[in-house]
Image 1 (spheres, rainbow, N blue to C red):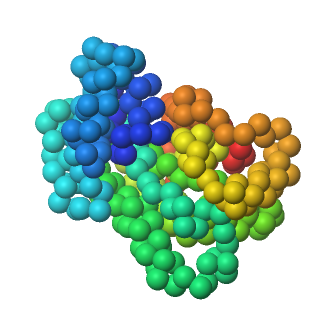
Image 2 (spheres, rainbow, N blue to C red):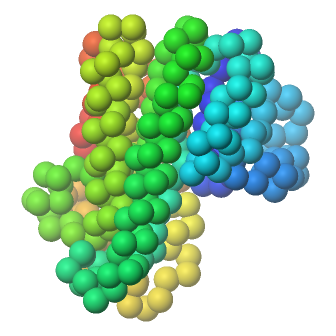
Length: 272
């Protein structure tokens, strides 16, 4: 039975991972969340997930090393000491820098510092700890695939060529995460373990539901740049479509062809 561990499954893309992976009763699906009770309540009240006994929810704050360590031990008990797929999906998308460039925010140094610390703690530090603590289980698995959710915003060429100055601190943390993925590939490729950074595309997870008029105007400017980059861009895709596309990439990705890479949901470097 293929086993999957997905972090950050309480909502958005993470929840969709649980929906799609658990649809196959042969899969063992383990989700990591900060609030186990709330997530289990949500799952138990979801008609689409009714009767799916292959879902296991574990509680761990990814800023707490000991909690991650315990989650790895609990996962080992569920899967008999092995894990096929590890998907480091958990992340934070701060509203603070979402619509502005770094210079525009220069008058708020404390907020800049806090935002940078928050995104690096989750996207970089926790990724290292999650990879290290679950690696012994991955080694014993059959698929041996480790995925980190990233973003096209971390593509420096995209930033330069299309003037995408928004989300600077979030993007920087994801670029650092991509480098971490490449370093793990460099160390473990000889063991046949795939490490891959995978961007989900522009996805509607409700992040635009409560924007101010000023934020909407700034978002429209970014949207114009997206259209210049991809003239056929029709707006954000659904979580369902994004996960289906990423799952296809994960299933076909190999250490030899894709190890340590940074790809889109399309399996290439076209981000929209």
